[in-house]
Length: 136
Image 1: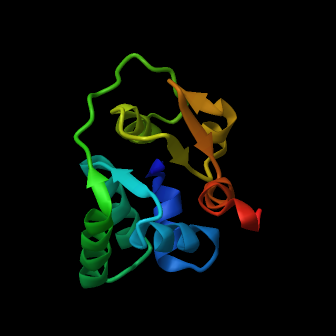
Image 2: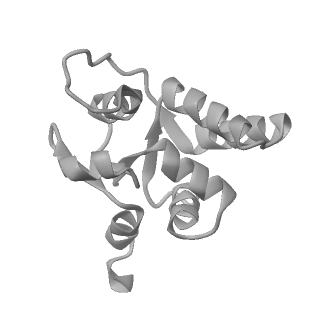
């Protein structure tokens, strides 16, 4: 089974909008792949949703649902990696915990890396193609 760490931007889009990101969330709910996350990613998701004025109870419900459909990992810190946005390191730490095959993101900084320590960095549409190759 495919294992993927979803960047916070993918999770926010999946929860608040329709589109490929929502389809990815639905695929995780249906068990078509395993979502891998961490407390740091969940914390950032909660902060972003709150900043976007999503209600407190709704944010709590979203976080619980993401935890229900995901494997929550406690990754090892990465202090020796060069990355432009240090806030993004939590995604690499989670994926590198040997739990993920892919990082799914819309972040151009991540996408420009293409791969990190054997983990492919892809867009949401690429993950959908892997999950259902007949539709690509």
